[in-house]
Image (cartoon, rainbow, N blue to C red; front, side):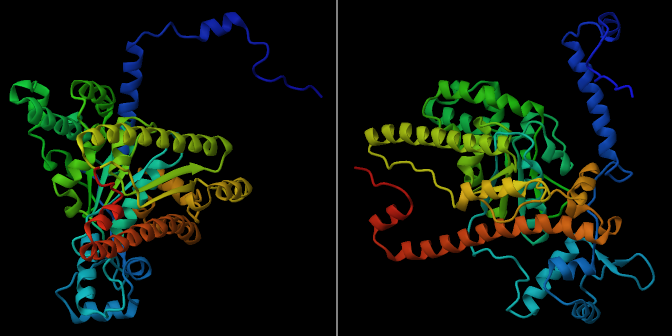
Length: 467
């Protein structure tokens, strides 16, 4: 029996040269980019309607009762019959199941919250007056499932009844594609917010004559400049595109121009000063696979940090280095700021997060259980209990540029759908528990602060009184 040699042996040099194209110059990159652009547009249209727009599907009464509103199917039908002014849904067949838009479902939630039993959570928990919780999804290793995790957290929260803002800080724009965002240039990305923040600092420090054309334009930026609606009625988006990466080069230049500019706080100041944390319940930030200035802004603004990683040695090792770099970066900022603050008699700076959790993604229980157990044993309390399994539903939905919640369950085997949905439902449940717990703790600490002496308030806030 003749054994076939491996393909890398006996390669003929002349034939190899004949098959090799001529040397590529820089224009070759532009050509490759144009091919990808046309292909991307073609693939994207397959998930869109004939008019080129993306629409969120309707949800069946079965889904509503199973996942969205804690009400029995028979009771829902009685309520709809007794209240014809409520959304009635549409049936695709005579006497078939009724299907409702997410706007319809939100109206039904509001009705049950006002008319139903007080013991059921028809509306999601948020203390009155509490600011939105900001969740950053970050890791400087690519391919660990950051965007998928962030997108499904946003969709889960929206289906749960929360108002959600998604912020895409990755210039690759994958999150923007999922939500069908239109981002013509960097002035409709977070770059505009960074520029505006710096322009305001320059204006206050040196006056209008110190502003160049770019900074003058930045001062005109408003939330409406960068925030756009999506095909989800309660998810808005700050999108990204390739030019957003310019921020990584421009931000340090601005910092050298004005050393007192707190570049890491630009995004947080936007959320606070423009009342973004009042307009939304949850803000989810998808970060680039690097610990650059954009990621630092995201982590500085965040209340909760979610770090996805796969169950592999290399991703575990890389994530450990990511945490090490986080410590070095933010400890350095604290030390530098506090040295200056002490000299000026100001309070010290201390970075704090409500919670930091690693989540194992793309998990294959048949091959990765042992290593996942090791990772969870070492990370301990930092690791979320649930592991996100990679299922057929996730793969097929991704091919259509959809999240699993956008996929019609009728197109899947029932078991496949239930397994795929459960893996993200359980991830969201753990994250929601962090959000709800942090809100509850904030509310009780605020109540305690209102009755405690000033020194106690300063200690609770993580601030050291000036000496």
